[in-house]
Image (cartoon, rainbow, N blue to C red; front, side, top):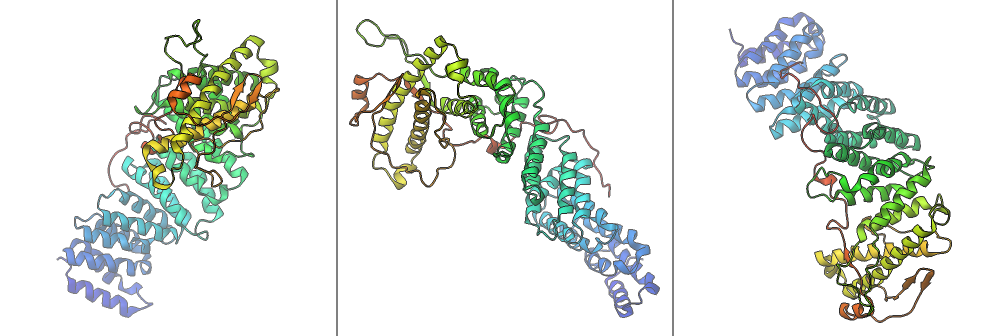
Length: 527
């Protein structure tokens, strides 16, 4: 005979009146458990009554939890939400791991209100036993089906940082780090990014030693001991993602040496053959930006001279020789060289940073003929810079506020930063001996408050091979400027001011590509 509303209220009354002497009334509690087999009203009451008296009947614990789980899977979403809301009341002693495991599996729901309730219940049991809750979450991440794993990782990446220190103790954070390392043995690119967000936010890892441990994690994922296959977009993708994750961790005490070395030895030689994981991504510029950002934090290198030579060689490729002149002094009709400003800024900066470690490289490690060729290219590039800098300053003269926010002017502002940066670095290299003392902020990095956007008065610097001489030159329109000097045409990147790659969603494809292939798992309730 089915349990009715009256039966449930009667049993509830018996148990409530018994107060601390509930054990003789096991039959009354069994009636409440049987309420899960009734209609919608009976189920709603059972969802509330079962957890209220759960702790008083340890011999019926399994039956009580299973009854509540039946309600968590009911066809009526309102009943499911009620049952899920009450689940934390079962999270006592040895049951915490099971309840956490159940709630983690319930993250797969597509109902927004139900999903939010699952999140709230997980947070509630975190405050009861954080380590036990994490045990359930990581169990599903390692062994559960894909949708559960995905949502459990996202839960950790968004919710852990909101928990107070009395919940996220050192012991708990150490456990998170240890379990995350297990998960990282087989992850997709998106999972890797989210898990790095989890561990990077742990207070226990905010020390120099902690950041070094995080770098070691990334190094393991980056496969820096293997040669790069430039034709494989997944391999290139992995390297980009890992490098982006490592970048914020580098400092004067946590060095980027292994990454910089790998870029010099394996990436730069294959720069032109790299296969982009995203069609619209300028993969060469992306790689050069990463190298530039890492270079200030590079420590002692075993093969410093060889790596500097690779940077130097690659820099020469992007710095053209001046076009040949015909007898009357005019440029020949051949196409003018393209000045790849964005690429040169990155390469010059990287060369400048590593050059500090071997300041006599240009004088003693480069033969005279090659050095002469470099200075000719450098001078030609520098003269072209002066024209562009003047033109950009004239174009931006007097513009402030909204006028600088148009797409066209945004590009001009960044272009001015790029050309000024290159100009500063080139002047350092023209010193005799070459100097490596100047400091710049890379053009795509956030603007410092001290930097003025308003254009300065043009200096008209013309840099020669032996040094620099200055004279005041009035701003001239492009046509008149070309009468004085015929500059090569310039090229700036379409994504000139910022990295956009990571925001595109990370790795390509589904699990099984990128960071490794995880096997298919069977569907079904395992709690």
